[in-house]
Length: 299
Image (tube, rainbow, N blue to C red):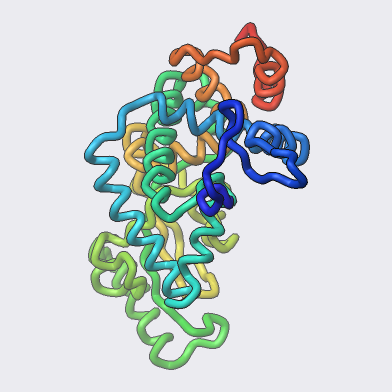
């Protein structure tokens, strides 16, 4: 974390971090101590990053997207911590991931884009093997909703009751789901976009009444009964559970990767082999990294 703050010195071709009483401590010494104290976690983090970066060139699209994401992160930290301290907090966050300056933000984002591409490709390649168990366990789907909002659904105001009764009557008389969204939905985040909530599965952090009702829908296009939550009353529609539609959501890929702890290490090791990773004579380090990843040579 302090390497950029230290004067440059080398002895015998090795960078010197500090000297005490005529005794030099090199970066090799520090890294050895770091490994002993921090363990394989830090080593693997750097190994993974090197492999992922070697997997593909940085494209103009990645750089442009990184610029947008960098501004978004800086804005979030600024709004939360304030002008005087936000950069120090952001730098601390970067240092916790092995980076040393704010200039490394682009490197961090490009790394995440490359890794995401590798993981998505792995899921697609192995989809027939991975997906059946994921589908039965997590019930992935795309949903939309109509929300008639109430401050306290257990004790609605007269205006809230009147609006809800009007919405119920309209839907009962045959108003389409799309018309219900534009006419009655109070969810301002999506009531101009068809009421879509997007990807969800059994792990999505919805209130239990909403989650259970959404998961109970089995046919694409089917709509729930009115469901009460702390926000008010909802109609929920299952838009699609078709794979081609699910694959349009990055959250779908993220959920699959998150459900199987073997995917990330398999991707990293496959890519490391493809890039011709070489541990030299350090078989102990290789064995520790493979053990950490849960991978044997046969794989």
